[in-house]
Amino acid sequence: MTIRPIRELGDPVLRTPADEVRSFDRELAALVRDLEETVDHPGRAGLAAPQIGVGARVFALNIDGVIRHAVNPRIVALSEETQDGDEGCLSIPGLWAPTVRAVHAVVEGVDVHGEPLRLEGSGLMARALQHEVDHLDGKVFLDRLAGEARTTALRALRDR
Image 1 (spheres, rainbow, N blue to C red):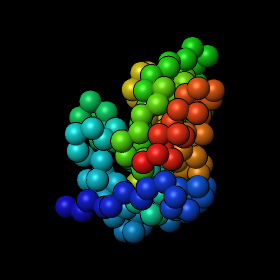
Image 2: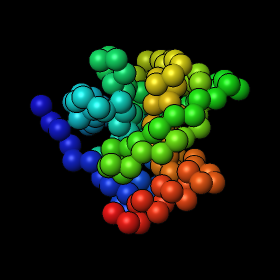
Image 3: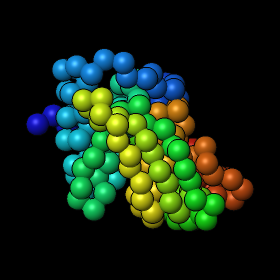
Image 4: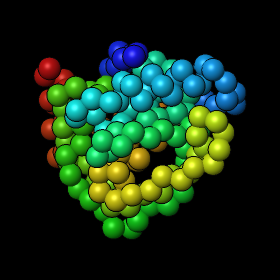
């Protein structure tokens, strides 16, 4: 079992858009396995490859004890209805902030073997899908904050 260390905010890999996966080989299988094993802990809902230092468009989710992954995921639909709840990130430990996300999200990509897949859900699943795709695009949840929420979160980050 391989639990990979999590990169924290300040590491340039977190701000660099991840590369599309083109080779569905042993290296990709090992990456997916590492992501799934690393996210398989209480309190971890999702983990993107850049968070373990790999610039590839891959993430793993752990929602309600069900672990899934997606390779080359893209958001294909978001509900107009939004949810505004506290969100945190393994790469920004100890910081939570109210973050607006769509209530429902649909992501399409492929699995570790290159077979098409579709992940969708509401609530926590929707939040996790959007959060992990953001990581693959070089963004963190702080980038989604506005107004007082952003000011408070950045102040807390600076004061740590």
